[in-house]
View (cartoon, rainbow, N blue to C red):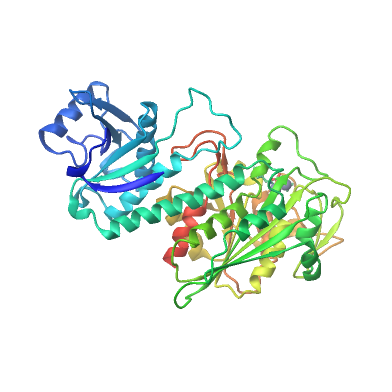
Length: 493
Ligand code: BES
Ligand code: ZN
Ligand code: ZN
């Protein structure tokens, strides 16, 4: 999507969006008699500025159109409402076939918080909602075409500053990183085997800033990464481990390791999944996709920390070499696990990666994974589960996520459930009791691979990584959660 910033007196477009709080007498940036008469006309069709509602008004001459976008009640305002309202307004503009839309930016006095954040949220709502995954689809004549250009029209030209323009550029970069992560997870499984993902990751390298290393099968064997290797053994496609490193321009304040589960297809392996819904398991690399999305973003911004990204990729298939229930897997840190279900494969990739990541001396280690169906049962499809040892980061993820419109909730990680993982043949079983605390026991398993004293948070994105229905600014399919929240977290460190 193209974006532009312009003073109101210079705008010559045809469709203008203005925001409105529920119950206000005028829309934002449209005061006086004009504003009041728009609101009076909109009220005829029961529009009062309700959240997610829009009203389409035509000027007398029929040349220009105004779309009022409801922000809901003023006192309930949250930044994420701007994303939703912008997305709804653009949908309305799309329905009337407009390619370029002006968005009337209120004056800073009219909004709570920083105007640049308000504008950035609007841009995100626009770019993220106009995302489509249509590379395999022949266009149909009645397909609606997403709006191609968003022009930010400044009511008060004093707000049209270099800082504002930077906020817009950064919001576009953040949104494009999300769309990149969505593309990876929406891609069908066969064209994105592990080695191909390694090639895509290599494309993110940037001289002096981002280095990318792909560890292939032979190297994983040398390193003793039994988890990644055994999970990948049932496929003709060899597994690999991608290690990306971002070096900040100035002095590095901290080292952060971000790990993402990269199962390019999860058939379940020999413990094969039911066929209904199996197609969504192309998304089982959404954690790794989020890591690559973050590095795409890191290629465009300065953050004051060193970031290591680890993306272990494997295809979980039931081929002749496949791991079997009853097998014992030895991981990178030497710990062994008895396999009960080959469908609980993600934790083995993460185990090797967490142990490896711990050797990089991180101040914080985060892993992101579509790990357990149990998390969807517990928290539904809009909330990611958080478990770990770093309470400050967990609290931060919940509050930052809320601002970003990405939702997180914490589950406990009690030692008393460690007994569920007791095994007679290995250091532990890799799963707990069937149907009992599946997300928590997965977290307890992972904890065994986190180095002593390393602050760690595990994010289970099994619910929100993929949506069957359209969300306000995430069309059905891969959502790119939690790229924006982690980006905001890194920025704030
Ligand atoms: N990739 C799945 C988890 C999943 C389920 C992600 C639904 C997204 C939506 C994972 O590999 C898996 O199959 N986990 C098993 C673990 C069980 C065998 C202990 C599960 O959740 O059923
Ligand atoms: Zn599985
Ligand atoms: Zn899986």
